[in-house]
Amino acid sequence: MAFIKSIIFTGVLGYLYFLITISMIGIASARKFFWWFDWQDNFHFYHIAQNFFGIGLAALLPAYLIFCYERTRMWMVSCCIVLFSMLFQGNINAFILDPIGIYRFLHVSLFYGDIGSIGVFLEILVLPFFWLWIFKCISKSQWPNNL
Image (tube, rainbow, N blue to C red):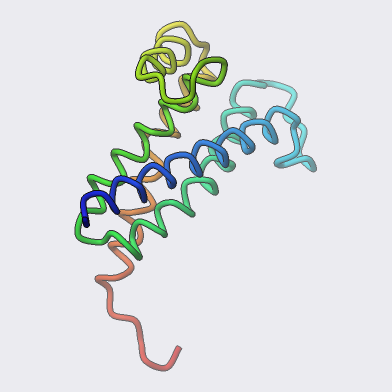
């Protein structure tokens, strides 16, 4: 039963991560992050920085929920969440649970994409693990009692 609960939890968090990353990529495409700073020299760097900020915020919520509720299997669940998110992103114009969606996502973003889509791929892949590592380091440290 714990295995089934973990799979359902992973699927729901993978879909949540997919929805939040898609909305953050859309916000970055509309140039709504860092609106006060208009970078004219290198637009790709500016766009990748916006995506890094947005996807970093998007990865924070699933990583925090994994850290709170699946601490014993957090690395495995995080891997599955990233794979579910890639599956859903690859299947935007197809059946939502088609297993070829991971291939589509890798094919479009990593192999045939520009520098921005490769950045988005790496951010979606790495940032949940980064947040889990940060949470693990914070939980190991000794906080002063007077805070």
